Amino acid sequence: MSDDIRPIILVVDDTPDNLKVMSGLLKDLYRVKIANGGEKALAIAVSETQPDLILLDIMMPDMDGHEVCRRLKSDERTRDIPVIFLTAKSEVEDEEIGLSLGAVDYITKPISPPIVMARVAAHLKLKAGADFLRDKAAYLEAEVGRRTREITAIQDVTILAMASLAETRDSDTGNHIRRTQHYIHALADKLRNHPRFSHYLDDSRIDILFKSAPLHDIGKVGIPDRILLKPGRFEPHEFEIMKTHTTLGRDAIEHAERSLGMPVEFLACAKEIAYAHQEKWDGSGYPLGLSGDDIPISARLMAVADVYDALISRRVYKDGMPHEKAVAIIAEGAGSHFDPDIAAAFIEIQDQFQAIARRFADSDGDMERKKEYLQQAGGQTA
Image 1 (cartoon, one colour):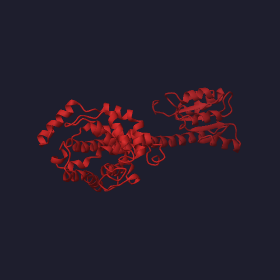
Image 2 (tube, rainbow, N blue to C red):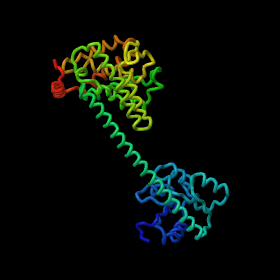
Image 3 (cartoon, helix red, strand yellow):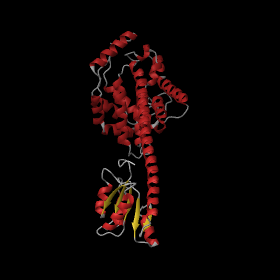
């Protein structure tokens, strides 16, 4: 057998004669390393060529075998190396102590060479099996992580593609999607310890809100251009049609859920947001006229995020409103349009909203492309 692949046995004993005997016994089948004390043994155990098994004496000066074993088993780098105590301490209590420290076996001196060789071989086979299973588990864990990241990335791109489809037909841009995502994340993070919301807003839920937010206006895909692209005030019958985008969005997401054949948490959240983000705290919103806590928390968060962005954003037919004025409007709507606690949180972190708006600001090129689209679609750009 080549020296390159033979298992490494570390023999730890303070007596030179014992080290010589064990080296002579093992050298034909194994690579042998020796240590005449605990500190040296621990240094070899964490070296680049780690031992595959350790034969460890107990009665040594400075650091006894029990302490060496304790340290080996407490170190992540060495805890999986099997330790066999090889000692003159032959009482049952001594063996119990050794095994309780994590040793895989206990051999008393004077040794029987065939017994030592048989037990070393057996424990090396067990270690090889354990290493294989550990490596396989690590590989599978890494592969699951990679596939999960891949699926998540595909999922995120699909969401943004669907949301962008809706945005290309509206007077907003793709940056509206990003802004509302970050607005809702900031609001949720601010409110995570609030007594009214702490039961709902944990890390997982906040991630789901961030993922779901882009689909809030997906139903606008189903609104005719003559209404969706109209720059002025809607006629009553036009507004009634416009209001259906909430129901259209919910229905589209429900259809996706049915196609999947199983519930998906972020789609359930997206459905809440799409359907209820136009509801108002006082019950004067649509489509159901829900009020107060009957409105899903996700939709109440989106209501603030969406209105703020609508107020401060440029459109092809209007300039954006100053941040301070938008904040004043939301503050005035607390308790009527908006959940008062969410509005209060928004006011406290308004600087974060302003920073997000600047980070994802619409460019002049975005506006020109939007004007061109509206002209091609027959919309007015005045």
